[in-house]
Image (cartoon, rainbow, N blue to C red; front, side, top):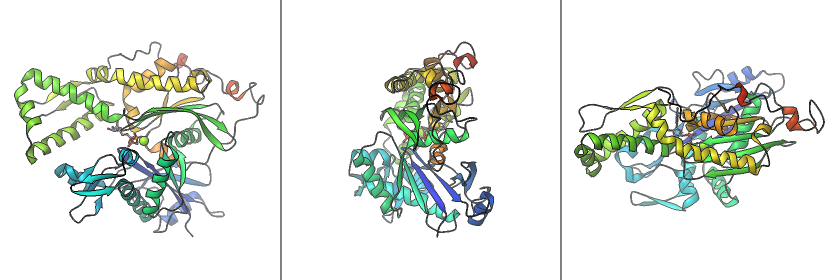
Length: 426
Ligand SMILES: Nc1ncnc2c1ncn2[C@@H]1O[C@H](COP(=O)(O)OP(=O)(O)OP(=O)(O)O)[C@@H](O)[C@H]1O
Ligand SMILES: [Mg+2]
């Protein structure tokens, strides 16, 4: 019988998976991990396990040396659906065969046209899930998982969830459990926070294609989302677009001709140059979370363009402010003030964008918490058991769980005095 669990956070842009090997009898987690190949993870395709709850250890699965499998699917020459690097490589050359965002497609249409073939969107999703499951099986002794957890946006309808479950079935993953993404993120936070205090948790998840916010209360069965709101049309991709527009304006100011030629070129070379530029823009955008300046070479211009972090941040701050406004409204809709929250948790890889944390601090008066790997937090949290329920009313320090939590733990008083979202980082 298999003794491992699989969780998949199927994202708009990237998919991350985690596995957890269960301990049997007196066996230690390390012994169980070593037995199945999920040990330190260095050579097993499983990276940096996180200690969860004493019954085992969840760890992210590495596929092609990365925790982030692109969710992109591309139709191969032989008619099979390709995933991972093979799909990315082919999509750059044959964009008409690629679906970049199967998660979005699953909600919006029953089929997409890849080249001249109509492909069921459930099959697109199944291709990604099957790839992840195969990779996870390979590092877990070749057996099937005893349990599969699929995370999903908290506002998906039962019909949306049915389609996700159908995709899992076609990927050979029967009877998956479903868990809202913010609940998984809250579990991850609760398992890794210095002290569980039972107060509600707010989650802000800025992914590739969407932003989702939620407030979760801790109850006997774990976390329950009491308020959710999201924008299905704003995510990290829009930040790429903001950087693209900065670059475009710079290029047009200098000399419009090469830029216009690049955009008008319908040959495969032109398509390839645009796709290369788009990849470099994404890399530059991500680099701006940790560096002050990026250089972008554009075909036809003799020198690379220089973009400063400050101008990029100024460009993205209005849209990010609106997204943080969603979080504020979600907290209010839950009937809470920010001071009553136990934590404000940031997840989704794009929440690394520096103005996000500053804006949350400025608007909510709370220092948000960002996991070391804010994308993997969802998949890892999905395999973390729910925390214990909060103490009953009147127990511990206060009359209620909220008072016991105390508003001060993450209060803005501990934050650098002036939090200015328009602060120039350079
Ligand atoms: N260091 C970074 N700084 C800023 N943005 C980043 C960084 N690393 C990745 N991103 C961006 O994060 C986005 C992907 O985030 P993530 O993988 O969490 O999304 P997803 O789960 O696929 O999408 P969704 O949750 O919307 O379905 C991309 O736009 C990517 O460029
Ligand atoms: Mg996500």
